[in-house]
Length: 212
Image 1 (spheres, rainbow, N blue to C red):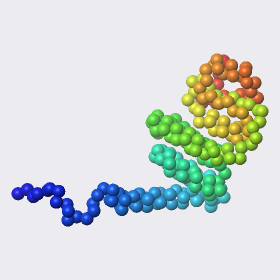
Image 2: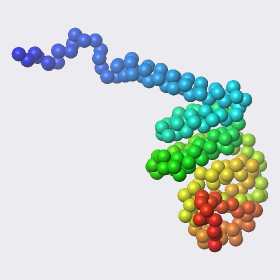
Image 3: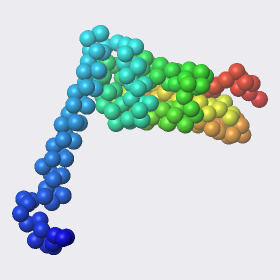
């Protein structure tokens, strides 16, 4: 015999509505998990404070793992922890992000990771530099008359170093004109019109050394 499952079937149970369950059980668990994650990342970043505000090989490995796990928010939190522990913003660029990008290049050369994984990881490093940019520009020097043109070699896909270099020139007051993929015609036109003090070309391979 099939029992009646009408509207009175669940009256004997207490409030089991979805909103109540979310509020009383799920949200607290998510908050606890988030606090644990923040605590773990803080402990990792604390190693920098103990070592005298230097980037350690462990820091590079930890950030690389976060990036390969495609966890951009945790990567941001990790960098913020390092800053809060006294690491200078410039060191995050030159001693942490740069070595991480270099290691990704090694993985690519060794064919250890596929193209899509490398591409997503490099994109995340770009996002981390955008995240750090306001902090880097916090003590920006007065804008100078000096002008620099930065661009990648024709056909090059390597723009990470170009962006990082642009950021440091901007911080030091330079007027930066950066274009990751200009045409040859645009390059000569800009050089003719702007009268740059420096022209910098980002070269990603030996084949790109020739510039006509």
